[in-house]
Length: 219
Image (cartoon, rainbow, N blue to C red):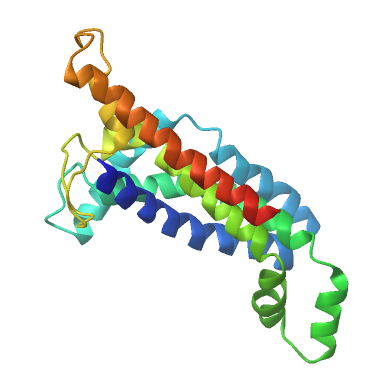
């Protein structure tokens, strides 16, 4: 369960970091004010879509598209769940990172331009390093959000406990296990009943540690 959780979260983190950082750099350094006022709320709307919708989106659209690239991919896989989860947490990365980049003093940009740097060099070598604490915190918080996600992995990753690092195989995450087992038919006091609390407590510790790390980085 832990391996499946980390596998899906790493895939989601990679997708969110690449797309979120690209969006943050564009909004902060390239987009005009009028474009920024339109695009930023559009990105933030993605965070408000119910996660069950993302789960069905993974099953009906993302997985069939991936099967054209990976013919051996079955309908349930860690890759499909991770990609869609990355799209879900991407607004968190882009919004917090963009706020950190906007807070960088304009004098640093002006000094770099005066030395002959291009806009791309200013963005990647001046602004991003100066806002690195906010960017790292955004990434950590997004990963914590991915670790605690339930419906996407419950629908798209499958419910097969599988110790693997192959993203094309189905896996079961900690949250999906809780959702599957925590039914009214579970006998109180049984091993299965107690395992729900054990997995939930471990999940709480993992997300708490990530949130504390994110806040420490920001400070």
